Length: 225
Ligand code: DX5
Ligand code: ZN
Image 1 (cartoon, protein in one colour):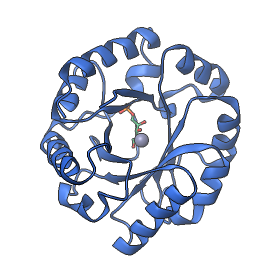
Image 2 (image 1 turned 180 degrees about the horizontal axis):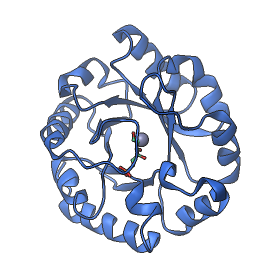
Image 3 (image 1 turned 120 degrees about the vertical axis):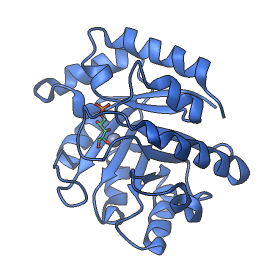
Image 4 (image 1 turned 90 degrees about the vertical axis):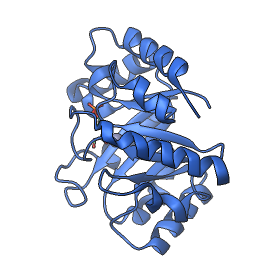
């Protein structure tokens, strides 16, 4: 499974976004993770289309859009127009049929579809969607804010999702998001994660390129699929 590093824009300096995106590109980022928050699904508001669309036009990095919003189904077409490469939706704010339809719509619009579990959800919540996704996101903090502490107790869930995927959709990746950095990458990779969202530990590292290089090395040597 390919290891990918996805710096999270939430930790960037918003007054200098273009410079920050260039810094991520020059530092070896694979994807750019964009956290969209609506103040309803999570107790925080971040940014939306007026920010994502110009970023999509600016960078060649694939945009990995994490929709921490209710009703993500309303925005699939606009996400595709904005240049999103992958769209992750949460699975606990609506019914299963809407989640399935939204994942299918994301794929039909030419993007990778991903489904997320927040900390209180068990691995089995993803079972109905395993064949409809190109990535599973296991949150390793409560969604809503950067800079929180990694929840180590999510690792058995990462392993359980990896094993379930190995049976029905083995090429599907697993992303972890929240508190990823020098001391946590190896645990997450050992549990079966291969795509790492890194906010604080990338944009706010003294040397972003060196940080991403070392996280990648660690992930590559610790990964267990
Ligand atoms: C939190 C967001 C994360 C956040 C991660 O809800 O989904 O993507 O930016 O930030 P760090 O890496 O600082 O925990
Ligand atoms: Zn995120």
